[in-house]
Length: 593
Picture 1: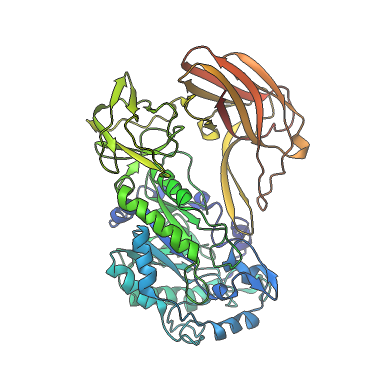
Picture 2: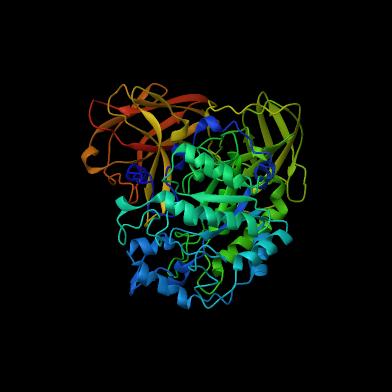
């Protein structure tokens, strides 16, 4: 049964291993349905993704040419014919793979679940499949099933085990999705592919590897909603306790996956997951050394948890079966931090205090965890809008008590007794009585002279006219997707972004606009108003907005303003005259002088 609408579907798909706008495909009407086994997922908070396949052997190079970005897409990038790509299997022999070492690394890193690619878009099966001979047991000299050993090793350490499976895209099969260089897409029978390979292989995975925590699908297509429902129901009978990711399609997953490298700007409800890779690629590339540091991983994990979600961080082993050195090293460093601070991550919900200049918050009943990335210069930490009755405040590490005072709805914590901290995330615990305060999305953004910079993000804007807050997607390398929330579509003085800030200290402040502006929009006049005083500026050129290239932002200083007394102030940014879109505004930065 051929599906002409698939070409439309693919206009929504990224050129990486995942989708760049999968949240748009999530059926919000299904979010009220709760899987009976979702509890462990909500508690877990930290997962490990592993991309491993024939592409790992190529390591980002084909016929002497280096490829960048998503290494698992090299067959597609280089348009390698199936007859040539299949030959890679003859030399794929990952003899250094050690399931116990991988599982132990996961445990040392503090992850609670692990998902590995059983079959990616290249079509090669990394398990012993009876459906095809194009698998690691039949087609390679390795002759063993690494998935069997890894399933046992992870469960032995109490880690939930799961499989990634590309259910529709398969560049090896004549009827599989998306190989347009070997096969004519318009002549494919997608239902035949599902019947002969995809569904039988998924049944193998759900039948032969013990209880699975997750089946992680990717890039759906070729089926109507009714057909997808039948597909899902047939698989659920094999493992009713296994969770299915939202990328099974048609809003039928058990939890929501955002686009690659995407975190919502504010807390959202329900079970969800943010996926990042450790460097710029998902599958192994030998020349990619842009690894996130332990500091970046720890702060990313806290940020995702503060919004109520899970972080699943990917690593890409090489063709011999080795985890990259820096992935192993930095994951272990992350695990050391979690060993001492895990209470502030595992089993938490989103914090009820909005993002502050110092960091973010997570919560448990009766406890608020303050994840402090930047310590205040005056040794006093302000937690605004804390209406509950505080019983005690202490450091999570060492449980050292800290002095505090309440002034109205503000909590002030004294850090004078705190020893110098070199942690990328110093966690303080506030214990309180009564019910948790509600999250106040309309709370003014804190601006304080105790921090070198105070970001006021686009997500905090109240928009007027045609202005809107929008998540923009773009990429660095091939498939290396980025997401940034901006205020867009301001072309008239009636289109405005309004921000409410609370300035805690009098003094002089520099206001910096962080924005992207293409050539045809540069040179337009805009204005920034603070408490009724207007500052004019002319937009500066940065780059065009193209989803396939980097979106460049400039930090443009446009105002100096003297705050005479602490209080709430309002900022308005808008075009001065009618014209083209002024710019895409990422943030305003308030910098004390």
